[in-house]
Length: 250
Length: 90
Length: 201
Image (cartoon, rainbow over the protein chains, first blue to last red):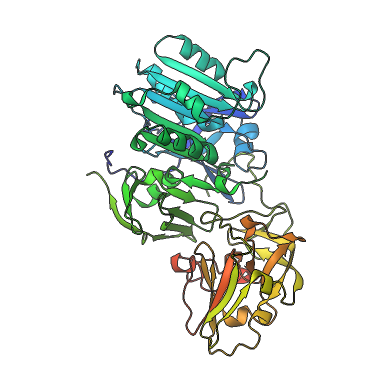
């Protein structure tokens, strides 16, 4: 099992919004300068805390999107219209605003790189965010670990990081990206046009003899469906790591 | 928005921050033995229900309540009676 | 409070506070779903309701029998300890007075227990005298499983965690015992008007 070093107290700290990137109509990345940031691993998250002028507070977790090598810390947030924190982060926040956060948090859903086993990443919607941190880490560390991302979105407009994924997979260093669009496909769409199912996983997954490391992140029903298929296909359950997103993330 | 019951179920990753308020170690990589079925899971793997007066952690194998964490009024209450053992690396 | 998030207000405080809203609560218009575990799916054919514990002759109803008991329709404000209050919620069910009719007991407390294993404790006098119901309709519709259907306890004058979802019975007790949340920080009584959220409140 992973080493469990004694960590310091997890303190709240302030980051300043250096850049806002509108990734899709409903999703934005906040690129933050966090002066006291201690560094992170790909797959970890931060807790964000908002405080109103009367002291009311709301707290949510967001996956880190940036690579450990990046100069700034990025989180990517999907706006949930009936949410409380996400409509503030995607809509209200402006450049140079301060955001209170703490982290990095988590150590289970983490990829450090540096071994030979291929990677299989399976994402649903904004579940792609921690997997993007892994892909960015892989690229920034010049890793050639054979990596496949299977990424399910509602429509082409909802694909987060599309241009960057296109560029990274065109680099020819072993990254393959397979998209599926579940609700709406553009004319001439050549990717998958259905929810992720076992047949799709059998087409894109590495042979189980290669013992891939597998990360699955998305809404709870999608994560449980995919993890169930992968176990049925004979992958080692200990190699399948999952992270569920839920409406508490609003 | 229609909330599906299954959407309310998260996993141990969702309470990593809360656990770090209490423990000095990263808890999602610790391994917990269920007091009910004796199966072992990483804390990151366990089932977590957050839309409740506290966080409720259940065993993914048998469903038994493993942990209850209540935070409020400047205090924490931590019930670990559903866990037989927690293992960490030194 | 040192740091304030510029422009953040939060979703709460939509309604002005009024004499109907206990301290620390805010009004919601939707009906939030709280759950401490998977939602039990109880078939009507399997469902029973029991009264047991400090009672000579335990009582038991099937769904069919229970639905033949006299019903009441009540409209009440409900207050969740997670700070939301919902005004004017309309319920139909059976008064706990009806359920306990003719029961001779020395008990002063009850433990409500549920499908799925949930429990919550209450003084007997807080579920009698027209203060509590076993409700199976909300807003004119059968109670949805995510809100506790087939039937839930309704004790609107206490925090809503006392209104056990998926209720399966009442155990009459001579001594107060903590239920699921009461054994881990939450108040044994839970009066929203006195903000009795946690131990010692």
